[in-house]
Image (cartoon, rainbow, N blue to C red; front, side, top):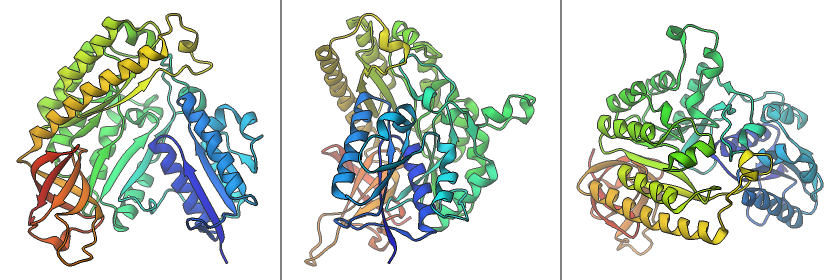
Amino acid sequence: MSAKLKTVTLGCKVNQYETEFVREGLARVGYADAAPGELADLCIVNTCTVTNEGDSKSRQVIRRLARDNPHSRIVVMGCYATRAPEDVEKLPNVVEVVTDKRELPDLLARFGVIDIPTGISRFGNRRRAYVKVQDGCLLRCSYCVIPQVRPQMTSRPVAEILAEVRRLVNNGYREIVLTGVHLGHYGVDWNANKPKSEWTRLADLVRLIIECAGEFRVRLSSIEATEVTRELLEIMADNPHRVCPHLHICMQSGSDAVLRRMKRRWGVKRFLDRCRLAKEMLDTPALTTDAIVGFPGETPADFAATCDVAREVGFSKMHIFPFSARRGTPAASMDGRVPKSVASQRREQLQELEAGLRSDYFDSLVGRRLEVLVEETLVDEEGAGPPMIAKGTACRYVPVQMVRPAADESRIADGNLLGVNILRQSDGCLVGSATRE
């Protein structure tokens, strides 16, 4: 009987990728995922420390796994494990704390894995696969603890990434999401001592990936405004069916004063310039972002400026976070702390604005034909069939429900890419009918 494994991942896409890497390695020595309700012999917890809530959830998950799997061994990795290993190792059933993700091959070796994988070939039950291409961050944003726990800038070899993409596509994944701790710095560690003509950048990697054979599309995860280059946008514009017209450009604030205290690398004008360039060069792109409300010293005028920028860009989605003071960061000791009640109120106000902007963007897509990745099909148990037959995500990162009639329902299967004529928006998603091509 094979040993049973449970994994829990908190936080970002990079963490999710690294969990899959460990799972794939452990499968080579007989570990199989425990079924629901089945006791696990080994638990892997991949933690997050971006916010105080991330720390708390990480501890809660470990305690719950120990309670539900009393005889299990628990291995903890991730950013919270790196930041507070002494706290983590005191938690129940924890037998090992991995403080550096570069040690994951060594971890697998300690579990008897001889043939250490160089990447992944599957991504659990998901229909899209994340591919980590880069690790580490050299920036020093005043609110962020991540450069302290992932300080080593490393880019994966191009050949290794391309081989991984081909494996995933061959195994049926039709969307490849490129991710990294600082995705736009892909290749920076190699380029330092080379002439500019020999640099390898994110745009170069994307160009090579889209040349791989097979039916699939590429999506970029979070990127900084300064890294939305004309070269990258040209590749996206020239390959609209291969590279999703979607950019998640980190804003954090629309106030120059707040951005300076955050130690961000640009002001509002430059951010808006890059967003305008993306909208000029791409066909109705989805622009999404992150925003922090309640940063120390944030005035009503600063918050109003953030709302103004959101309106001007027309974000289709915003991840909105109240400021979380992280011990050891400059922002944690800044004056001008905004009361939690005020930060919560601003978050609600920005969420309300976001809902309106999202609805406006959805309206702009009605009547369009969008490429949708089918992620869930509905079973017709009684023969009549439900009016809605599938759900998925469009190239422009919006949820889509597919309804009857459909031109060719045989193609509406989990994991397929298909064209959908958008008919209307309803209850926070788009509704459409599949086309023949």
